[in-house]
Length: 310
Image (cartoon, rainbow, N blue to C red; front, side, top):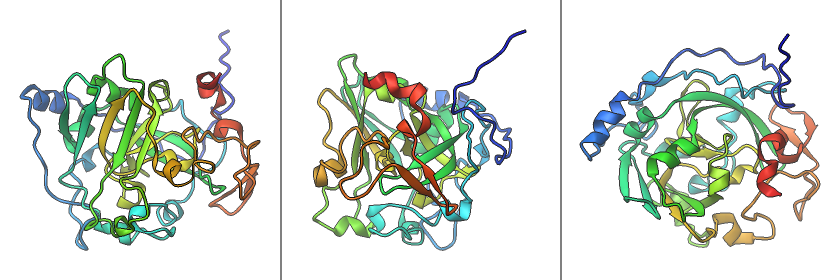
């Protein structure tokens, strides 16, 4: 008899609905063969009257059963109304303000130490990738947490598409920087644009995930549409939102919050209940369900990432 011992974090998850939509890559391959990208107009969240998302047919994505959880999902109504997005304000209730975000047309540029710098249309990019749903814990440095069904694709697939040079040591990602869309960008005391980064080893880890959707549909603006990062073993501020620029570099990026206060928000930002924030304990966290639970080392993903930090 074959006995399978799953890792400690892989526990049956009873809350999610199975998904059944698969992604076809041929659309992307045909578009890239011509060496050009087309911009698709429209916006799901920029105007009061919403228009259909051009990739809506890809959702809900098929759930990857390797990423299951030991706690219930956060209600969509809670997760979508309690968000950090400083480009739209320094409070949590930015969902309405974030409707100013025009997510079409949208391009993502690959820059720096790559074989060829270029821009890719977001819809072409999304249709190129093996979309899937993953159930991830998210732990904020502010000691609250949620459990989210992200849809998207592994970051390592995007790295392959960008084709970086072997000498690249870090990947740097930046958010849009348009004060007309994001009024928070007019706050000149912040080091805009929002910048985050990972080592190449972190970027190629199986857990690193590029998010395009949530709760079985394209991501709403307040989640960081149309493209954001999810690295569930790190504090939430590492999850850079609304990405427009991805650069491969050989020098460690100076990140947004590191520029503001490095002693509180450093580059690594791995969840560690044994190391307190200078102003509060990190030993436990408040879930959006209202209870308080112990925080786990690496947010419960140590088996997958601890070797990165030996």
